[in-house]
Image 1 (tube, one colour):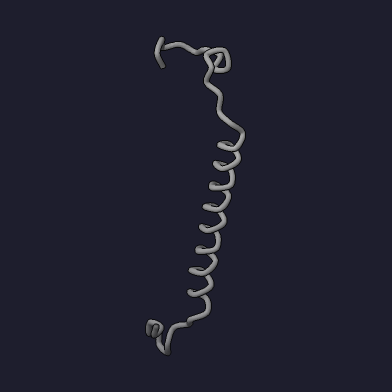
Image 2 (cartoon, rainbow, N blue to C red):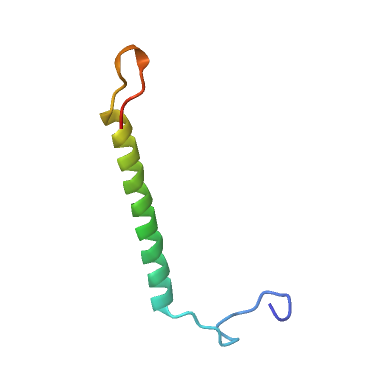
Length: 60
């Protein structure tokens, strides 16, 4: 960033702890799991409620 070229970050003293990477992976997995659960709830709700007679919309 300072010189505008690619450098070895370890030689420059920039070290990213393992705990930071672990937390990023955990957070990403939790977010993906939550999205999939919400998707299942939404798709399950649409199939569980059927329309009324003559194509009337379902009552909620």
